[in-house]
Length: 327
Image (cartoon, rainbow, N blue to C red; front, side, top):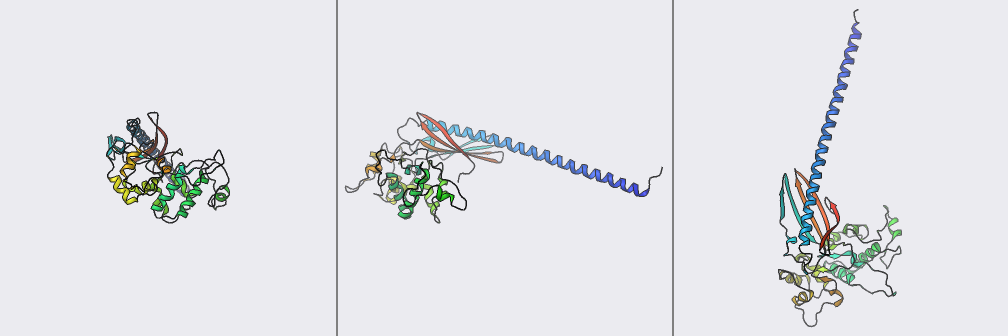
């Protein structure tokens, strides 16, 4: 039987339509398989990079355990090397360890409720922080503001203290409301939530600050770098200027000062210049908190692992990890 011309054209169109659909489906399946394969490859390579980063972390732990029993932590020790790099198949691992006690611990501003009801007028930490901001040419009023906001942010109660205090009602009234942590700072980046930094302040202040998981820590005079002389000057009550402290740090013994008495002697203070005893308790020659970086380049991919390490009982314990860039 002869098929009409119009039906033959319709059949051809149907065949072409089916072929087009099959081509689209085939291309979609091919692309799906290709993307899935690439995604799995990327995941496998990043997982491998992560394990290499953990290997770099273990090297940092071993380096810190080597000095865990030493009475002095100084920059001549192996952990403080800046040129640590290891080749691996397909890339390399670079490492860096930073002493987190060569900075001002913002959590030291915490004020516990006094057992006898007597409140200290100004704590040593408040004196140091105010002096630090003075050395950075930031007004005492701004220092008082940041101190008040920090103390209310990290204390356990819900009532504002002082003229600059702020608690739940202050932060929940904002356009984008949130609640204060009411616990110790985990990161200096939290300060952006309450400090109300003025232009340029954050960039000037935060390089001198850190947030450690305890309140009573010391600033290590053996590991503080020359560019942080403003902090060291503040830590001793500004009895010497940051410029004078730069000279002291540049002439620091290679093995560091054996104790705080040796450090004070190196200051060559005159008879009428003394470091307040209240502040001497806030400086030391031994560190327990460190931050390690394992920077892995593997198969044209990068994995950065920041590890927070504490020395306890001769052991280096990792108590926190961060991935990627830390802001």
